[in-house]
Length: 395
Image (cartoon, rainbow, N blue to C red; front, side, top):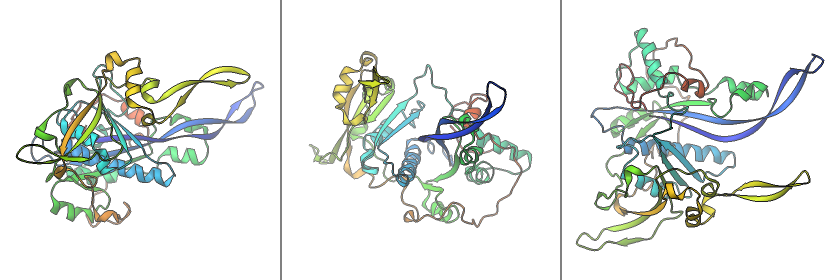
């Protein structure tokens, strides 16, 4: 599983040289907008068909990424309030009730954060993320030619740490020097690439977490959150956007009947199409005076600060989006009390650069392009491509 996270968009001052009208080189300054782009590769064993790379693994990985960025942005004085997820339509990973109830109940695991899960509109979805998952496969093939095997998902993880993981790129040097070349980074230039291994066995987790601190996730399947009577969201196969609605924990109540379950109702805003109109994004126009002229400017507000029902009704594409609020019911005894990826080492993590007590084989591998956009320009990847000579699934 590969996740790309653009975040922390910022404007930097860059300096360069150009020829003036007389042909002499002169220095100039220009403001350049760039983004931090981090790539996360999650590897998991596939002992049984269709079991390991499912909704539970997806939610384990997503919880970890939200935790990481909430911490990183917090260090910069930025509060993470909303997360937008783009995925394909894999039925056992994303387009299913287990994933939707995780979106709806995000307040249980990450208080104060809302989530919008957007599923691919089939007509036009190829993006820069599609070919990034092929990079581990390429590394495996190159190492295989050098007689360095990757027979298991764990060995793919180990080899990719050595030959694919990245913490320093050419963009970092250009930014430090305020070089005008930083403008080529744009929105998709790579900042970091990190590897994680997901296991379901507690004994494997306990053994590996000391060797690879901060890189091992435990996917706990002992208590998977689900809906009452396994009730799916209406029109599940037609939906392309599911947005969490609650900003606090709903009150619990007891069900009727023999079982007397404690239940909580979670509301989600569902839509047939993801909409980016100004109304749905929480934007509006206002007149302002610019250079002695009255012009209309766009003003953006936090999406949930406006009445969600008003935005739904005035959306200019409401005829096609068909947005509605749906209530999902989930038993309280299945609710996670913390992010699924927690805990490991009670979060007292050792830095990733700590020495590892495992024998690792080094090899010279052709470098991977630092720009995720260039990577995506290669041959389009097949969804669910299997890494060569290994039993790890890559998306």
